[in-house]
Image (cartoon, rainbow over all chains, first blue to last red):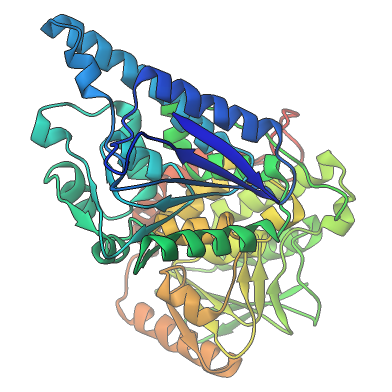
Length: 243
Length: 238
């Protein structure tokens, strides 16, 4: 599942699991709990709020719960369950893009498929350089990509050759390379340092005390194609008392 | 407001005075008037436009003090700016912005509507202030940024971090073309670049057509009153 804690201005969303080897897969229940947590953060947002998302152990998240899909017992059943998770997860990405506060993903381990997408839905992504890879596994395991995944990658990653390497080459990308490829903002020597740097960045962003509503609208305007695919409308906000 | 000078084949448009060169209706009208004069000149030879300013600021954006938070005032300035951007995108000659000082918000849109952007590196910041002052940004201006700045992280840093970028940082992020040690050096480089472009003897109208194709997405989103001045729609759309 996941937990949401508040430390001062910082909301910390943690993907929880049973052990250090937990893959933090997105089953419908996990997706539901993430959506709940994001609603909660949104409801409690004030100027200067920020969200940091992280997990513990070897994996940030390895994507959708394919084992649960297989457990349907038939090919049609499995496909339906997978389709359900793809549809259920779309509101999570939409909620991230519309979230009225800056967002930071503190990547503690492997982030693959939908896990990579969750990371990329954040404004800033920090990861380890000692361990962990970013990996879009779909072409390796024979799954097509949901339209909103591709729109997300197109919005966040500028280089056509990098997008090709990620989506059509299924490259497993380590921290140092991910920085060079323009996928993540920084890579750090250990998981503790990722956590520290994420909190530091979070506090810097929080100190600007931006209006969450304006922040979210500007974020949405930055990604018009993605918003179109997610069905996110934009509105105009005209200034405030500072004028 | 502004002056227009001809130096050989180069037109130099200068925003005059030591103020912030805020883009209010009067200044935008003056700039558009100057551009009309440029367009009206007989095109016997290729030309280029250099836009620059006097004083500490290139332009600090819309005149929010004049607008007094009245929506129709803000809408008028935005529509006039869009009309000006249209003029620059359809200008039948290469254009160079020589950024002589601070450039922020709508001032950045004005600068980026030029083909080349050169900036002094000794003073001045490039700064999208909208997030800090609590204003959202209409889609047409985002389309302009997207067409000129390729890296998503650079656009995010400008819009979602409201970073005050030095000229050097702006070059590194692919936002502007080059940075120079002083305002005189910047203008000298602009003149040199202008002369180099003029030497190619391009047909200005072909140049403009090519530019319009490249900036098609921006052109499609521009909304303004071609008859010059009124508010054509009252939809809430800054």
